[in-house]
Amino acid sequence: MLNFKLEELTNSFQNKEESLIFLKENQIPVENFIKDSLEEKLIEPNFNDLARLLKICQCFKPINIIEYGCGFSSYIFHHYLTKDHAYKISKKKHLQINEVHNRYLNLTANRLNKNDSNVKIILEECQVVRDKYRDDGSHYYLTNYSFVPDVIYLDGPDPNDIEKSFFSEVTQRVPISSDILKIESWLMPGTILIVDGRIANVRYLKRSFTRNWEWDTNSTNDCSIAILNEQPYGRKDFENLKKRGLIK
Image 1 (cartoon, rainbow, N blue to C red):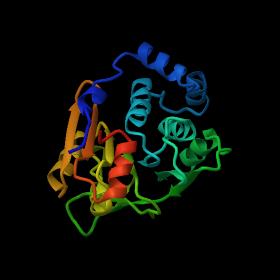
Image 2 (cartoon, helix red, strand yellow):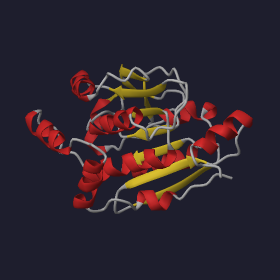
Image 3 (cartoon, rainbow, N blue to C red):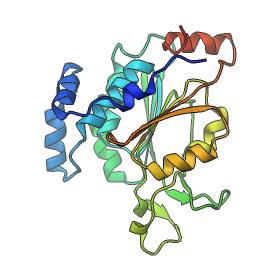
Image 4 (spheres, rainbow, N blue to C red):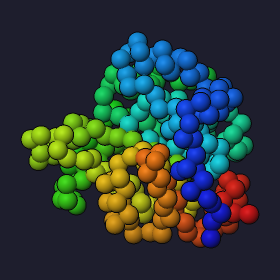
């Protein structure tokens, strides 16, 4: 099967000073992040989370990334894709950002350096709708997909963004995304799923997934990571996983 040590990643970066050092060593403009959060009245970035995201990318070498909910994490993913950490291939790299709020999407887009023509940025401003097919209280982003992701980051939506959620007081419910369930059948072996907090959603996905996912959750860091741990589909998939270090 695949070569991975998820617990080393979920357990990483519990110290802000350590995280800041790591981010600065990798040319992440943390001072600009702090300034931006103050000027735009945003939640101050969690540098432990951002450092962990960058380290995960460096370990698993994705070239196609999807995130649900945007923010400073979007910069981390885009920065990684434009650097030499992403292994050299002829195909274009992709970053798709799904977000409900136009303001946050524009703020995020303005942070990204769009000079690298080998990275395609897909900005999806979309609603979050109730999943009527499952009819279990879950929801999904009304978005489109044009590539198969290597890494998926689930950090949205806010309960207030779920349309027709049946809750008059949305603060009384937790978000339960079914987005990954809708695309699970065509994900490739070695796909990495990162969930920021959202333990109720993690438990829902664990119960609902039909394929062989391996999980690790760190309650201190409030972070969960899963990998689709299956044999490669064929020679091309085997070579891809080998390049990414998931097969020795």
